[in-house]
Image (cartoon, rainbow, N blue to C red; front, side):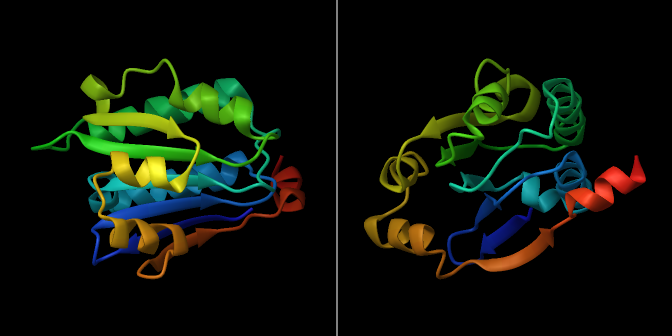
Length: 161
């Protein structure tokens, strides 16, 4: 917790940040928000998994189901260009889940998206075709406005079970 979606009107780019112990409820809440606001699905994006992020409470089968949900959300959208989705994972505790999500999935034909993982902001910014100045804005998130935040404490998730 939390998962935060930010948008830069200046760059027309989204950033999604994952902090702390993530829950499936938070991942589903973000997907539901994007389903209701599909403009956020059509933008290039950078996903940042911060050093304290941990997806250990999220089962890999649940990730598969969530991926199927995203594929269904993308199906009705018309893309003129391939969307870019860059991922940075700074958390060893989350690496297995991020690799599972990012690698080996057909996102080009099912989501009109190219998805890649990078080791640095500079590499991700280069792939997202940003100028040096835009890359600096991306790393600092200076021009990014918070759109939505989900923070569902694990104790509430457990209580709902």
